[in-house]
Image 1: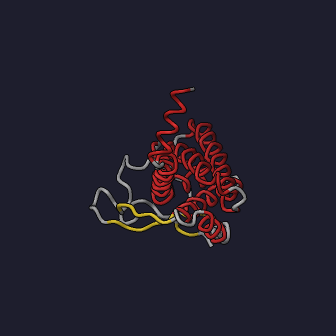
Image 2 (image 1 turned 180 degrees about the horizontal axis):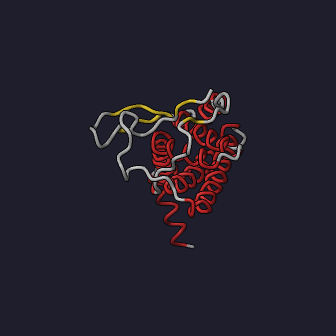
Image 3 (image 1 turned 90 degrees about the horizontal axis):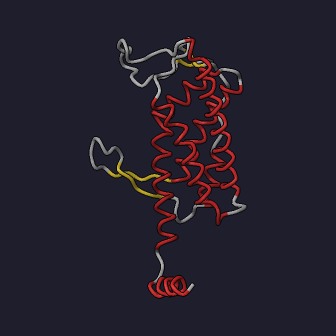
Length: 209
């Protein structure tokens, strides 16, 4: 059954000028943006599925760094553009949402020991700290991207763009930003946290080369 689509400000209708329906002359540009998002979504989903399989755990963190950086770059374009507003106020029914629990569990197994982290819940509202997991964040991102991809593959281009944009602002953009920061911190620890004698030996070898 079609559901009424959520809006960022559900309590009140948008004021004039707040929400702009893209004009018809921008249709080609919207299709290009949707195609880019579809390509990046497929790439992200493929990468996190590969990581979750556990076939190459040594490459998990670098792969997640690249995948998250790429999808955030694509998402930034959605965040910067005007709001996409489909003609209908109801989101077409695509059936049950994708089940991302197996993905989350696989990621949690691969990332055991580095999965959990803490972050400031909302840096604009205060310093309250909350816990999160990379596996939970990555599966939430995957779920949002997959839903948009389902619309796109059903030839519902505006629906796909609306969903990707709305969920970027409400869910996956923030989660991906957190994932990227944590993954960068993990890489920094892996590369820079070495014993003094190991670092001195590496420096000596570099000077003698």
